Amino acid sequence: MDFPESGAEVSWQVADASVWINLAATGRCAEILAALGAPVAIVDVALRELQRGSSNGHDVLAHIEPLIQSGQIGVATMTPDDEDLFLSLVAGATAETLDDGEAATLAVAVRLKGIALIDERKATAIAKQRFPALDLRSTTEVLFATLPDEETRIGPLADALFLALRDARMRVPTHWQARVVEVLGPERARVCNSLPAHLRTIPIDAADIQFF
Image (cartoon, rainbow, N blue to C red; front, side):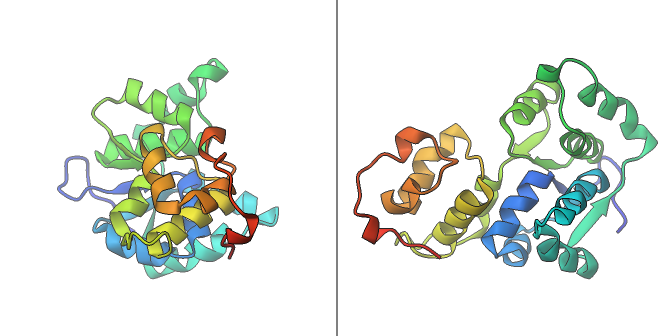
């Protein structure tokens, strides 16, 4: 797929591997991407990370490869222009560097003047510090922006949040946590171990927990 030059009007959303893992867990990847209203891509470096995970028994590729083949997901290739920025993000002290997929995602998003979809806390903090003009969004924000909230604790949004949390251990940004628990309800929140413990401690009857 061809990508626009920097400064083009189209805002590409470039998603890291962790975001694709979360979206795949929802079982609604195609629906979510269709509702985004903007082109979305995975960087070749992050795609290779998912391919390595597939060899270890993970099935994320089964969800996204058909969407790559159909053109719903673009594959962005790192260019020589990305190299210096990429290297600056992966070389150095552990506390100040990222893994290859995260670094590649940010480097390409910066070059395209796009939106970086990224979930990990350290990657988000480094991106905010290094690239204050870069638009950063999380899987949580993508789900709230694309799926209807029926306010019944059972519906497309609640179900997708639950599956991403339970099966992919999605990280929820702090400022979204209360809203996520409100949508999930205490029964579902209790079994989502990636949520902070204080959000999972409401006593409930185990018989009331809704599983898939």
